[in-house]
Image (cartoon, rainbow, N blue to C red; front, side, top):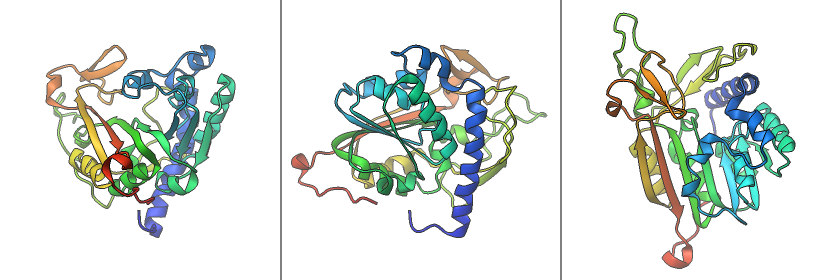
Amino acid sequence: MPERTPQQRGWFADNEANWDDRADFHMAGGYGGVEDLVADPSAISEQLAQDIHHFGDLGGRDVIHLQCHVGTDTLGFSRLGARRVVGVDLSENSLAHARRLAGAAGVDIEYVHSNVYDAREAVEGHFDLVHTSLGVLCWLPDIAGWARVVASLLAPGGTFFIRDDHPMFMTVADPREDLPGVLSIEYPYFEVEEPSTWEDDGSYVEAPDAPRIRHTRNHQWNHSLGEILTSLIQAGLVIDSVEETPYSAWCPWPELMVQEEGRWRLRDDPARLPLQFAIKAHRAAEADTGTTPVPTA
């Protein structure tokens, strides 16, 4: 993205402080089955397990995980045989937890403290797989700039994969007390410059014994599915598949949702609202296309 304004720097600073606190909160709640991941040297996270069929054999391949948080998913790439695994995150405290987890699990992972928009400058080399998931794009104000970074990190022929909350899901407000069970659209579907700003001392992980989050202010943006896909195409990627599902990894409306095999869906008429999407894409091999390399930023 272009040089950041003081206001944009302030938004990122607020989000970094918020996620530094969230990292402690999440780990106190056993985030991502972290204890089981350490105890079982073959274990990978449930989140990663649902998508490994998209990646093929990772043996000898280089993988970068953007917005990796505390590294519970990142760990799996090493266990699946990747030659080099790099995790990038805005929150240094999240990475401190990730490094401790990698050490306890006995795996070699590089963790880099960087805003995702600066990842190309912060990390050397190109990657066979660029991965990001879940709850990631809402923290980014500029989807086109993000896509250019993704493309710049990919080796020719490399794969990009994202699973995230569906932007339609992110427009829906909590049910009103006077209209129980009714879902209403209140937040932007398309990318807008000004974020939605929240004050919240909790998170989506149950951690009743954890200290409350001190840096409560955070800023979020939505991006339409069309904007996401177009940004990847304009950055030079080829879209291989797009998936939309009625399942979520988390439960914002307990009174309206039911759990099935670790995932959540609406109890009534689940087909009325997509809750997640997944995109698989690749960077074409230049020998096949005759194109020039994708710009680095």
